[in-house]
Image (cartoon, rainbow, N blue to C red; front, side, top):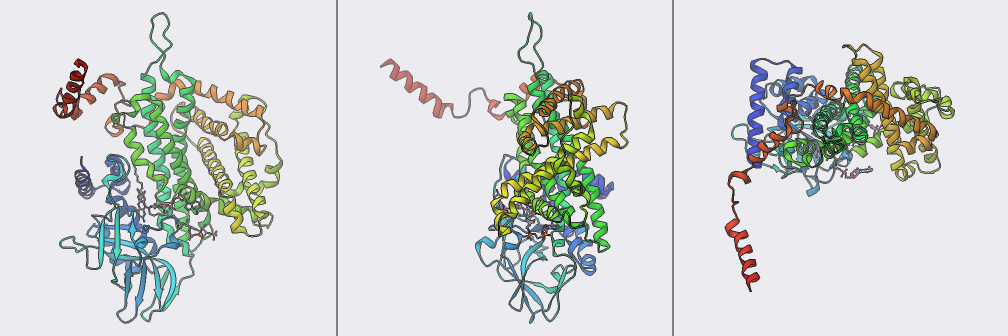
Length: 609
Ligand SMILES: CCCCCCCCCCCCC/C=C/C(=O)SCCNC(=O)CCNC(=O)[C@H](O)C(C)(C)COP(=O)(O)OP(=O)(O)OC[C@H]1O[C@@H](n2cnc3c(N)ncnc32)[C@H](O)[C@@H]1OP(=O)(O)O
Ligand SMILES: Cc1cc2nc3c(=O)[nH]c(=O)nc-3n(C[C@H](O)[C@H](O)[C@H](O)COP(=O)(O)OP(=O)(O)OC[C@H]3O[C@@H](n4cnc5c(N)ncnc54)[C@H](O)[C@@H]3O)c2cc1C
């Protein structure tokens, strides 16, 4: 499809989905499932996942009563317009202004520079009638920092932009289809006025007289919508990883290369230990991210309930976990999809393998909802704070509870003696805890050598990110282990999941061996025992690998991959797909008479001479 056709078709699908949701009707969970099968970014994502939650989280009761019924019936369509051309990560650096005018009881929204143009918001370019706009609040000449405002963008009769608003699509993005179904947009305000009651006023207010009244709740609650989406992105990482792994696993069982004895059949590539060493840790990651996603959902629900009761104690941890796990799982999934493409050899590069499109649509997850490095630095800040409070009498809780055993973890030596010890959950966990704590403490020690903490922090950024990743990997491993300790239905399933859990953990040790060795969390002998155990686990997973991806229950239609077909009938279908290509509509291609023929005829003439 051309961009225009793709966009229009996505509108068609979205509106049809909305019709089904109402007519059937579908529950919230079922509607999410429908979005999952629609399988295309579109304006509904931003409306439901960001616009509505921003109003719910930051609006007063009156504002919610006014705007939510309209949004819930989709009588208005909204988006989340925070990022600008000049600033995305640095939210405090946004430039759009919202200046209160006491004369008219309005805010005047203005884009003072080119870099202050809103740039990137999904659904903004062509669809949204409204947006939650983040802008610097100015009253009486004083800048109070960034706040949220509900703003109507387009005329409700003919969809034209309201006077004072310049709006459009930012252009084609990475890939062929992929995220191009979405109208990511730009927006500039030219002294555009909105009534005072359209500032989202749950967290702070501006009175009729123009007085700014901050509330006593943390200002970070303004970032709550991002926390909620980051949490869902972790479960989505599992879905995308599982999809790529399903394709690569099934195809690896179909594909044969080398190893034929006496004219017999060749070896299935899935039987090569190199293939297993690349594929099975990704299979394990798909399960691991699913379990940590379930846990994160619980954590998010818990913190939301606490916030409603004005208990803000667990907010920093919820922020660190959602930011860190969003970052870690999306980076691993993007890399994993690309690895799955390579695992499928040349055919993985064909569009009909399903992998190029999956990669193109997935990879912006490393950037949206917070650049992955920027987010790990938030985790690092949280860890440094926690380390600095050790010994103060305040026991670390939640995911940092292990730091409360700092004395032991800083000096303990791993008691792994034989390869099977690596199947002991307590030993594995302690290894990850020791590594994470030692990396965090080492960063804190290095930071303390700087007179200026901020300067030290910026000098040590790379180490801090690595410490944050180590902490996040510990969380994923520990939640997998917790899952195994709970009730798991299905005969034999627990053993399979155990294998995957240890593959996930031991492969991380292998991949980050430098961390584990340099922190003395394990010795090189213990590392080689881990590798030995890993190979044995691969052998155990091998006979069940296809069943473990079939368990994701993806239909062929959803997978959209000739290589990942359930029936394994890959080669005839590759031909079928090739023959569908428009280039094969004619035997002699368009352009032959224009370019090829004159070229070769000229060559023949000169050859005769
Ligand atoms: C198969 C199906 C697929 C479906 C796929 C669907 C996917 C889902 C849909 C996704 C749609 C995506 C569309 C994309 C949308 C967007 O991208 S919206 C824009 C997102 N933008 C960002 O994420 C910006 C990133 N930047 C920030 O979040 C912040 O600016 C910052 C980096 C965190 C820094 O903020 P700043 O105010 O400067 O903070 P600091 O000074 O560093 O910290 C101050 C304290 O505040 C704490 N804090 C920061 N953030 C939060 C938070 N969110 N919650 C709680 N607390 C927070 C921080 O830790 C500091 O605390 P102290 O150290 O204690 O002071
Ligand atoms: C597909 C897509 C959809 C989006 N949808 C929306 C939307 O609906 N609404 C919306 O408001 N926004 C949206 N965005 C914008 C998105 O949230 C931002 O692009 C994102 O937050 C990253 O910000 P940035 O572009 O400013 O990156 P930058 O911060 O400019 O990053 C550039 C580089 O600088 C590095 N960097 C930046 N700061 C630091 C630091 N402090 N320390 C170390 N390194 C640093 C980063 O790691 C990165 O390598 C979308 C983006 C994409 C790609």
